[in-house]
Image (tube, rainbow, N blue to C red; front, side):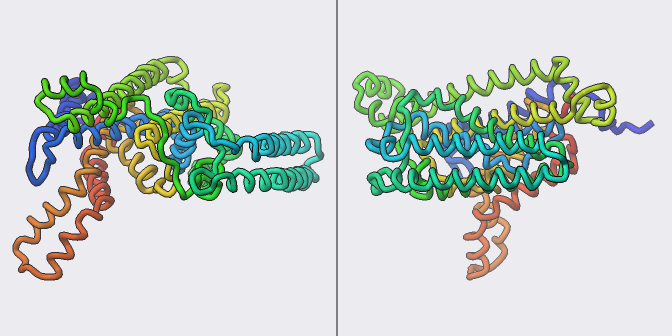
Length: 447
């Protein structure tokens, strides 16, 4: 009898704790060891951890869409960017004169656009099939002309208002934490619109639709400067934690830093990052708890049944398209929440920085490596892959110097070492291939 364990055999109950302990050890080594491989700085370790936690939230959203429902979302970057728009519109202070210049007309244009879409849908329902598409197209075209006729002058007026320092509509000046659920709502609304069109089609068409909508969202954010200054970037987004300079000017904190045996600059940076980490952990734990409850509920069992066999589920009376839409909206909302958290951490909205390879491909690697369908696996994959992604820039030259040691010093060896930091994606591809070869269902497979 073969001693090889079956692929579907239950994993050891110690597997998850040991893997999480191994990942935690990497972060501890980053904070404590100082050599060619680790920085020995807790500021660096906490910086990686905070983005790892945000990546874990994003991976949870993708895991809900793919792991629960088998839907392939190739436009993760677009929903992240939509969520990132929320802190700019909710938390930043109002720009003097911007609302008066064109705010009401922008709202009127948006209302006209939505009204045209609603009218087109109503016309399509009440028109004979032969004339359905032409009639709806005429309504949409007329609505678009009206939309642009109202919007363009309003946008020009807003962007000409103090263009050197602002040129955007500004925000409401509300607490930045309120922007996190708003970011989720922005992404959910976009997901609903995409899902209503594409979820009734084949899975490959959904991938194409989400890929396209992601690029469209990024293009809109780059070119519509009145929203968030476009390629000029939006800086100074408020944060929910203290600023380092304020802490350094606080005598009580200076005394506390001295008690820790740190200089005040280092202590303030660590304290701010710990505050962010605490907020992110609270959000992540709440999402995991809700996801696990949903996964174990009748709804979760139904979603997995639809994922495994849509035809059988449909024969049992389940509305597959409706359930797919529901799941797509929920997962995209979680991705939008992560986008708002990321802008809050950075304090910067830079549409040009939304790279699909970083914010779509890498997130998918996290989910696949961790184990699709397993919420804890998505979190593990996010924390591990993000750490490796960041450290690849440091480990690449060190590893290349070691591999090219037999070569004589010269332009070839120098070029190989200098180009090593740019081999991140090759490293991520190698990690993905290794996991797919030796753990096809991920490090923490779905039960």
